[in-house]
Image (cartoon, rainbow, N blue to C red; front, side, top):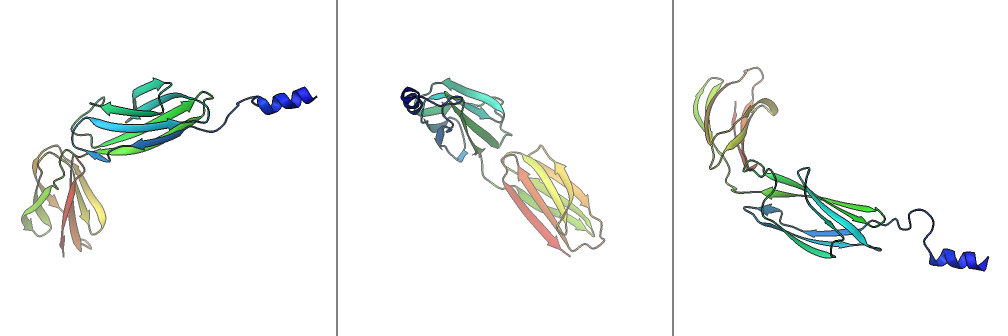
Length: 193
């Protein structure tokens, strides 16, 4: 009987011997204008770290078995990298030898340029507006609001666009135009009635 009790104190209990997830600490840039990106990762566990995975925009870009406790990863490019992607969603998953997992998620913004689009009113006749929107890079969306409600969305793919908008005059108090470029820089302008 003494032998059984002494074994229980020394050995692991039956089943999963340890239930504590690994610890992940990450240092990363919140914005970047060009590659490479550097991530500093510290992984620790009460037992032993088994693996580390890095997933970006749902694509696995890195996996290492039995990583060191402190890792510096330099990312020169990302799969499907494009000038039109402005947000990179990172997921880091660390597992220990008993399959306990830790998950950390963060975002890095790709800000190749930070200039706001420009919106100009070219012509206004009653409730019809001729608007020019332009940017250093490319425009992504133009939002038109009637009062404070979204009236129309235009998907764009150009540096310079001229649009004509006719708005229903019923209960019209304000028109707001919001332009967003491919790096999520935005500007807005409005006219009151």
